[in-house]
Image 1 (spheres, helix red, strand yellow):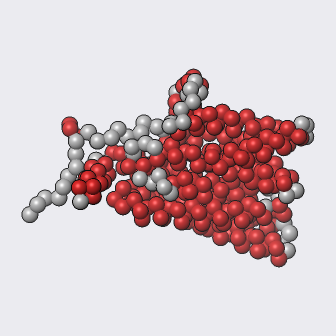
Image 2 (cartoon, rainbow, N blue to C red):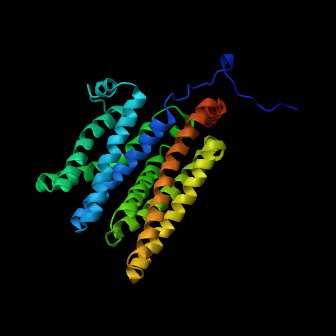
Image 3 (cartoon, rainbow, N blue to C red):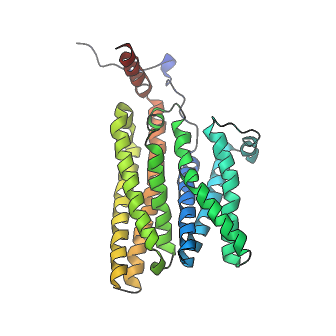
Length: 309
């Protein structure tokens, strides 16, 4: 009998070097970027539709999330100068370079929008900053998926088609969750609908991605990544369902205070936690796929056989 194939490399080293990034810094950076970008869209919608409480929460959420996200990125880089060095050139073929320019333009806009709302001054420029940050928000929420997919890490690279949609849905769910926790219940209708749409997009795109990836989807189904992603799925599904129920309760006019506030807050906390768990699960799955030579060697051989055939 032929023994089971064991994939290894010289001196027992992996084919690829696993990403040296710190999980808390980079997975947190992925989560907070998605939260910020989607919150900017929610802030603009709240401003246009006359929901000042929702708009303020979303503006503050976007400004706070992107600030902490940048702090996590710089902490992982080691020195602030390394982030500044990425702005010395413009390189359209580099997701990291374009992402750095995107963050450099987006972060001041969110801070200006939040400051104008809180102080009540310069409302015109503040409204312009809100609109501009909403235009950049979708790119901020999804460019990190392009950044991961542009690496050689198997479980990130093979998900290049669906991963931006996964991150977009996850960011929308997180922004909706923050609004449900903090905004006045009477003004959270758009957030509830965003929660449902974001959850459907995230879960549907993620399942489609795993089905298409084949072998390199295995790290998503094993160990710590599996536990995180399973928890993310359960929390996101429960949060979206509870948000939809809270919407129905609000329309029926049942429970003006606790009957609307408590379910919305619980739904929001579930959505935020689920979105964070998804980013950490994706991060750890990618690292695991880089450490196992099989996820690099087997897909390469399959592609070679397909071309020769």
